[in-house]
Image (cartoon, rainbow, N blue to C red):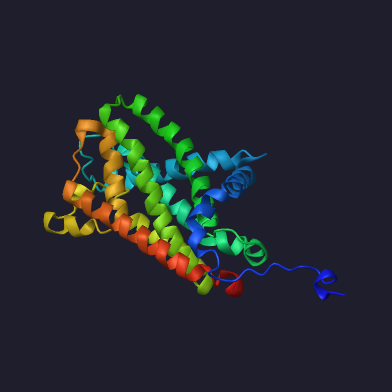
Length: 279
């Protein structure tokens, strides 16, 4: 009797066997992506009030503190707009970036069982984590709209730029998230480094102040921080003609975002085949 008719069939997944179909598989596994995103959203918001409130209170309270310290005490310039608007318009993309970085960095570790048992493009995990942070972003945007009405700032055609700028913030979050997620699998110390990076980035990015206070000879190089261009773009889109955007710096930040994203995808794909063994 043929032994193959008696022994159970086994499927062996070898690294590199699906290289040619990887990007097509991202579309093929779109239902898994939707399921993971929806699962994390439900975990965060279902049967809880603090989940929704926290998405509002965190940037709002940070805005109050920064407005008092930098606006009232330090009396830094606000580019002709109310200081709370200056800060909150920056808190939107920054909070989205910081939350995405934190969620994406833990996405592979928290789904270790899936990585070791089934095949799917691992890019699905950090991407779905970023989508969850996008929900907080839209909730906070409602508060910004209320603040704009309160301070009498009416939208202009510049507001249409928020659509591509939100996409840019998404790409910046993905770029950093892919790097940290892959590094966190290989070096578990990164779970302690990420909170420091988020806290450090909050103060070196123009969240509590305008980037216009940076000396002119340093402002271009200051834009090597990819969030500088994103934040300046958000302020320009929200405040309209009342603010100006430093286009050379914005172009540099744009280049850095795409360079980080390309290198992040390359490094993630390079390390992806070892995730199941290392994790």
